[in-house]
Length: 151
Image (cartoon, rainbow, N blue to C red):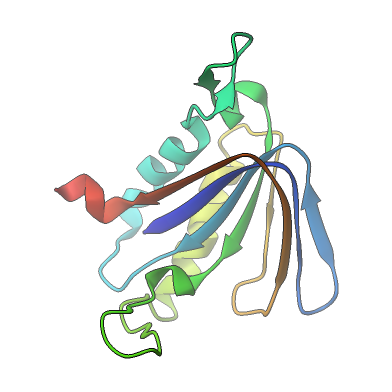
């Protein structure tokens, strides 16, 4: 699994129906699963994201997490995080997980994050074209790839 995590002052996603889902200060998480992922990694993945110490403490040091501060999280599915650009100019997405696993993994990830005790967890819609807006804070952007944990 792969996630791009952005520390935000605010973020929103507008889904195809026109509904907008917004958060205040917290994390915007772009989420994707790949073809050889398993559900077993989701709890550790969520724990890592919710516990990332990327918010400043009273001394200005990045020492606090969204969980510590009871911040919000907006999760947006984004299979293009697994774009393969090795050859040619058109990215291949063959390594990205396919349905039904990709949808099930996204839903399980969102469900587990919602149970972490954060202020709120909002989501995009899997398979929709979406418009994402954010006010990046820092900017602070972190990429987590569970494949890196196996090295």
